[in-house]
Amino acid sequence: MSTQRTHAVTLLAGDGIGPEVTEATVRVLAAAGVAIEWDRVEAGGDVVAKYGTPVPESALQSIRRRGLALKGPITTPVGEGFRSANVTLRQNLDLYACLRPVKSIPGLPTRFEGVDLIIVRENTEDLYSGLEHRVCPGVVESIKVITERACLRIAKFAFRMALQRGRKKITAVHKANIMKLSDGLFLECCRRIARDHRDIEYGEVIVDNCAMQLVRDPTQFDVLLLENLYGDILSDLCAGLVGGLGVVPGANIGDEVAVFEAVHGSAPDIAGKRLANPTALILSAVEMLHHVGESEAGERIERAVHAVLGEPQLRTRDLGGKATTDEFTESVIERLG
Image (cartoon, rainbow, N blue to C red):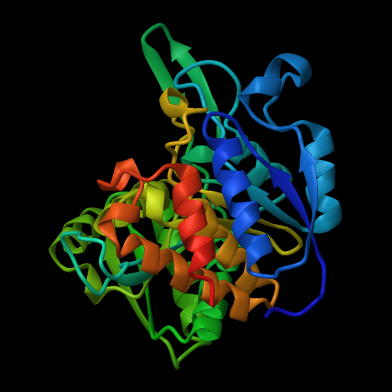
């Protein structure tokens, strides 16, 4: 069993299927013997009318106080409406590192086997700075911001994480052949940090070539270090290598605060039907447990999830099975050793 230390965690259930998958995850964590004091806060598209934002200041304050949060999916309107909840969280809490482990699950059929890589994505700037304006009718300009400070700290994070997890190689992904100043600065910073870590192999690859190499042989990569936009795109591509966004965890980490989240959408079309797959949020909670020193419990939960996914009849419908959210959750709980 895990230690009896109680962890204070903010819980953002989100909207759509968010409440269902967060409920499932809370049940699994409790069954694993992890002591958590949850602060359940309002967040999601459903509270925008009340607060003018999907992430009210009260939710941000709760996360700041606890330094730890578990977040379900929140709908983001396309091209209009309120600002992305994820962008709000990352910029308000300075969650500068997005961590996306991508690992093959035994028994889950995919195009590749033996995939085990980690995406490290800078989270606060690049084209996601939101600096856009209309130059004239029919012409819009969006500004890409790359700073030395942000590049250095994400590179330091990547090398520090690689050492902690026993990783052997970091590959910086860029387009410096075209964006010589912005991506050039990113590479310059990565090289500076790499020189201080001679025990970890360092390499570089142009982003379009990286995409091709990933779909040819993803096992050639260990840790991918990317700017914000490239990281956003390639992390979803990598998820597709192991079964999709429904089976990979996600984390947004800063120096003082960490938010762990499912990276898939809110799937409003199946909300309330108890059909959602809670795997991604459960595995994100596993990452949270590693973060707070509860690795033994995290490993037991991960083994239980993998065991269930290895049995086709126990999978949820998105993975070709027939299990409901509750049936899947019960199966995971039953396999906790």
